[in-house]
Length: 217
Image 1 (cartoon, one colour):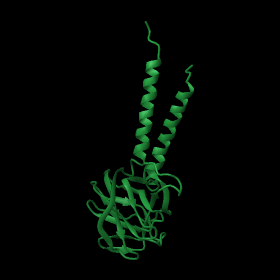
Image 2: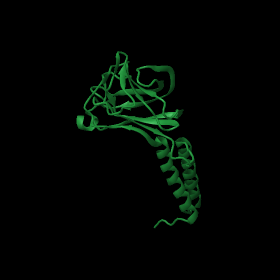
Image 3: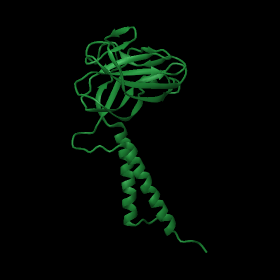
Image 4: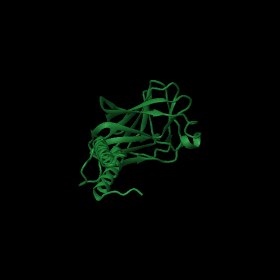
């Protein structure tokens, strides 16, 4: 039976805690949610974009979830965050941040039933400063080989934003979730930092265990 000293238990506990923090802080806290039942499937042509405006309540944007899938071929999708203007299809030229993710086909996600409830997660390399109450735009760019589907709803479920493309806008909204900082008073702890610290501590623990093991003659 493996026996651990108190110091070893403390080290392993800290490693586990930091690993959990690295995951949690990688996403952040939920800020804006638009996730009604999908009844609309706007397509993003290869090399083109769809735009969904939104109004954050947090002071930073850490990551976003989009309910997207590919019809035929898997590939890379890119998300860009831009400034927006309330009630219009205008968006700024300046890209505030961008992230990419690999998107699977509906067959790889278990059919249309699985694809319709699947969210793809996009983590931004660094927090994007936002002004609560101001309008911003999620730009979805498809770099794959076949059309991308961004599941939405045509009943205008999100009154603070709208979906639009290069041809115009409408009252449809696509499904998305935005994430920001933790609750006030909780210190921010970046995911890469937590992960590196946990790996370092785990390495130290394993090295100590190796050195303390008796050598066979």
